[in-house]
Length: 538
Ligand code: HEM
Image (cartoon, rainbow, N blue to C red; front, side, top):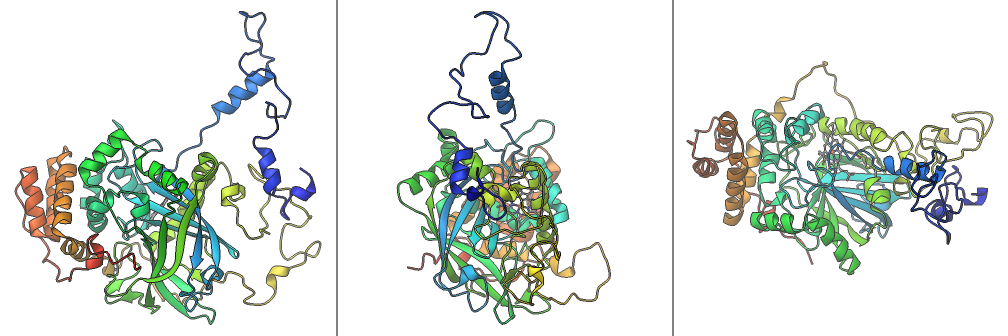
């Protein structure tokens, strides 16, 4: 490629990219040399030994041998689509992010996923679903890496390897695949009772969505929005599907999984191809940015908590439409690299300890998964804004950098444009006051209530949803081998609700234990029930 096909950082642009892949009328090898036969290796005589000198054979087989890359350590199975996000402008008062200005349109790429199954597992299993969105904004990439459930199993990222080890197949038999029906999962979530809330969501109908197009999405953590005048607001992000929230029933999920393990993947691609483009509204719940970072007594830094929509309504701020399927699964869906640290001016993080670990983990894992530090140059990951960084070289370096001084400031080329002025549109971390504190390895007292929020969820369910939850716990726990694990799970259920516990205990043929904590005095939140959904709004 000549210089005219290079971006300022030396990255190939559209036409050059296409040339790098398949083009031309003839079959060639990787060096562009025309080949007349790719079905026979070079031999000494038609039946004779194959000759080592056959470069075409060696090159072809060598490349095939290296076609696989490691699947994601979690969320390995996914399906994705391109689309557009149109901002209503309703968040412009609380965030200066350019893509949230009224009328702004931003290209996006969204990847949905299951969490625990391997890349070839079935779509319809009971699991949390990932809902990750890459906004290619004019100010850089913003990734909203969320799930279809608003809470998480753990409060501190240091336990993430443990919960995933517990949830993935057992190390000896490598079973079960992508099901929560096993001893280590239940052992973990009953020993670490902060997992109770997320587990309850998993056992509810939310664990078996009918379609990716009919799922809510949540940013889970509390984020901090920064307005043009520097004022800050704490927020939780919500995606609300225009089609409403719908689930499969368990029997449907089993049949669909058997008949078509690609049920959700196919559904998404077919719908988009047919022009039935799925839409979600992005919404925010807003909370005052007080030093305590709590709202109505709820610790906003605890990712096992929701804030009921009745206390803080979700305010719509824009519309997401998915309108184009990927043209190559590997290039796009597999190689996309999301990161919670990909933020743009106007959006900042909070001190949620789960978020802190994620900020490290995604970049770290992608260095292995995508073989080196240059994965932001892979087309699907490239910002749609100019890139002018000081990163050089490394595995899979695609750019041909110019200049001699890859550091700033310098006096040899380019001077020091990055040091001019305070707010030049650059990303500036919010100057949040860090409280005077002593270094400790412990959780705050405000993280210790593990049963009130699950109880609220249970009380918010309709009668049918409760039956489904009872059935799910009974089935999944029924597959555990260890009696002690089942008994501990029943104890957790007793602490949520005695009727829930009694019904599951009956199904398991075990006695129902007494609660060890007094039932929390909480009001139901109708918005938690799929029956109580108030979306779509028009
Ligand atoms: C992948 C969500 C917590 C580590 C993902 C993906 C999603 C997600 C949606 C898939 C992204 C894609 O489609 O490519 C969440 C949510 C969390 C959470 C909502 C909690 C609120 C964590 C924590 C860690 C972690 C605490 C580690 C400390 C990872 C890793 C991947 C991943 C390593 C694979 C990334 C890759 O290979 O590109 N997560 N996650 N996650 N997550 Fe999380």
